[in-house]
Image (cartoon, rainbow, N blue to C red; front, side):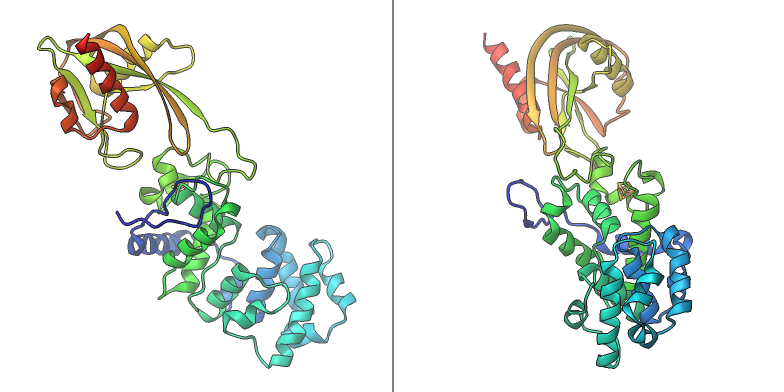
Length: 371
Ligand code: SF4
């Protein structure tokens, strides 16, 4: 997999590569079926789209809709807005809050009238009062179908999740812009950016995202890590979560050990490991190991002596592996939660790729053997 170093100061993380064509296709298909029907989507008039973008900067869609209609009744064209007094403009904005938006929109309308038309190049648009980079992208893509990326709050959240961004989005703005630009469908920028915003607003919501309905689920790293509710990382970083795991080194009568290979997708995909799982509240380590092995491999074991305890920190969480020797009692091992299972000799373990925390288990096994 190709990876690139992003612009992050202190965290070891690489911006993942995505199947870009597939993401574009699946998002646009989803949008055709599930996109929102909003009043400013029914027009290519740049003034109308611009008004909607400014109103939406700090206000929710359902609040904006009646204001949007009233505004256009009051100021149907950019010329009408430019010719109005500031008092008239602020009155029409009354109740929407963040009044600098109205003042800037008014001044910008006067500049656009002086220019003769709304500019189509990003630099000139960014020079207009009240228009930042994401708003400019929203206007240029929606009105003129120009391939200019966006990065509003919804899009930031979706990008942070699909990339499993380990820091607050504000600390990785350059990387998020890079990703937004890379994903943008050059053939259909208008639809793509609108679909992107809709995905964040209706599926990839701040709380309890509807991942099962999401067209990007397969490629979403947060989902694959089970961390969609933990990402984006909040600005004041919460303490990193900790999981306690029960792990089994299962021996058969021939002195072989049972190992399994993780599924290709998700954290540590394709790596081999000793089986086990998360200790549930109220459960002892022994009970957890017995239950996990029955659920994951459908075999009976006897849980024996403690072998080793291993602490390990991943980017998004810490784990403590509580490892016990176990004796295989019966049942045909089934790869229920993994890709493959093997009985192997201790001497053969080094032929398999294991994650770092599991290597410490192997080291402990070797040490025990030498005693
Ligand atoms: S899978 Fe879930 S977290 Fe990932 S982009 Fe979709 S809704 Fe968001």
